Length: 222
Image 1 (cartoon, helix red, strand yellow):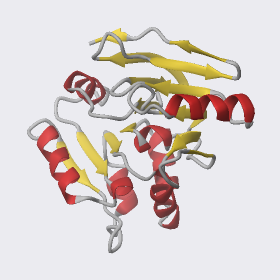
Image 2 (spheres, one colour):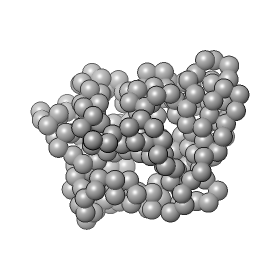
Image 3 (tube, rainbow, N blue to C red):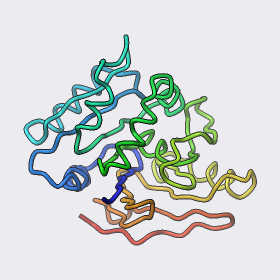
């Protein structure tokens, strides 16, 4: 069974990119679980999510305040697609780990449930990433879920500090090599390997970033 992750570089996800990752579930009306943990379960963001998916999915969400639902594992593993929103990656990971949800996500991945997300929902699947979880100056986070090897950096073209910080971390501070993505660009990984880069903007793409250099990746325009 293929293990699939669709990691998006932050910003507003264009409709064609959203359509693409919904199609990965392989169903006309997939069961989709939304995780707004990184945004502190902000009601306004959650409402927008329901508007975006209305009529297209069987949509549910998991919230951890005041506590998660009793059937957390069973509900998560009954989904076709799990989508992680943006926000504070470090706080999100800490909350998940307290409740054992990190291991539930690992089990979902192994079972072939599609995992997706933007910004924090991009970084979390990797071993490491560039984050503003600790303040606006940006920093390296080195304790991601590790479902994908290496590191990740979203917002590569819409936040001016992301590129130089990511390059410095890799070039000078022993950060693992990895992938960057421009706003709204999706990186589709299958069984741990990058299979395709998806974009709705001709000028936007993903990048392979290693010590001393970065290489733009060929992207398919939707």
